[in-house]
Image (cartoon, rainbow, N blue to C red; front, side, top):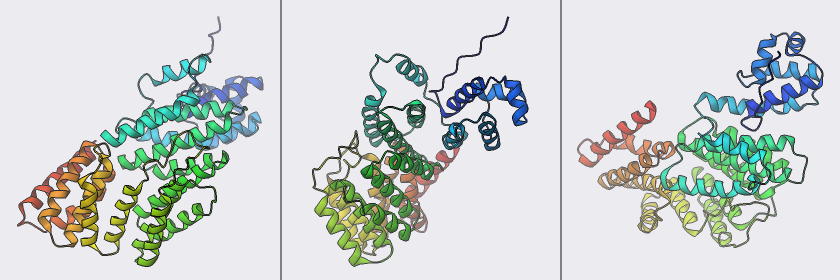
Amino acid sequence: MAQAPRRLTPHRSALHGFGAALRQWREHRGLSQRALGRLVHVSGDLIGKVEKAERWPSTRFIEACESALQAGGELLRLRSDLESERRLSAVGYRVAEGAEGRLRDSLDHPGKPDLLHSWPEQLAYLAGAGNRTGYAGMASTAHAQISVAAAICRRSRSADRRELLIAQALWAEFLSWIDEQRDAADSDAWLRRAQRHAVEADAPALTSYVLMRQSQRAIERFDPRNAIALAKRALNEARLPGRIRALLLVRQAQAYAMGGDQNACAASLEEARRVVGSADGDSELPIDVSAHCDPVYVAAHEAQCRLLLGQPAAAADLYEQLLRHWPAHQRIDEALWRSALSTAYINSGEMERAATEAAKALDLATGTSSARALRWLNPTAVALRQQVAVPEAAAFVLAYRQATLETCNH
């Protein structure tokens, strides 16, 4: 008696989605696994394993199957999602425990709450929780959600397609942020994917927001020229909400400060302060991605610009004012600004105060598992290694070394 083919779960991940699409096209062409294998010069057993998501298909395999099955480009379109997912799997990303069952249940029962409308709430919750406690453990959940959005989008021809593309762009941008905190290598790849989906969805505000994030990444790589180019490109969009425009102006100001252009930096900051108070919402997006941009956010980056321009005393004064009343739930940003304050103190020759602030920043960085915050502390650690006569400096350097070793071991 012939064994019934195993039920596939295309919604589970890009790998499972490709396997299901491959089986669908093979059966549509009336081919057995062995027959398709002969056409693409692999074994029928390998075809079966790919269909069951037990093996990763190579680029050559995907192209050969696309050609043999004349799949109208569908198999090729799945390639980029597969490549991203394979890189993620290599660094340990997995579907969160229980997520597969919940997502499958939502897809199989249309009467259940619509995933399309629940995603914004989930994203907002995860982003808020991450700011309080860090993003450890969130990647698998976010990856499961974006895989489902991609699977639904691939088979959707309805008016929901634009919303599904926006959902994928939002999840991809969130995953890029998680990768920044984890010191993983795929942050830029996730941002490219987010931009691709935002452009396809014709969502100009979201496209500009992703360009802002790419500009931010360029600044952290000490590439002011590219950061300015990305910010200017996004600022050309006339339909930008005020806070997204303010974020872009802040990125532009940082890049100008990095390049030593004090006047251009000041002009960008002045414009950012003017537009940040705009209350205009962005009706194209289900969540306000720029909600964190307020006058305090702009002031914090003005302090960073002053530090970049070689004005450590002015930067320290600003940071001290801001941190005196910093919101308790924004712990990752607090770690960054206390790290920057420690740098300002070092540049002003105040080593004890630098070590004290660095120790506070280190506690926040380890408490939120933020590799990004640890990276920001590295220049402070290098400078304080030379201050062997300062007990606070020696204590910080030792604690920082232990924290970085623990991060490497994990």
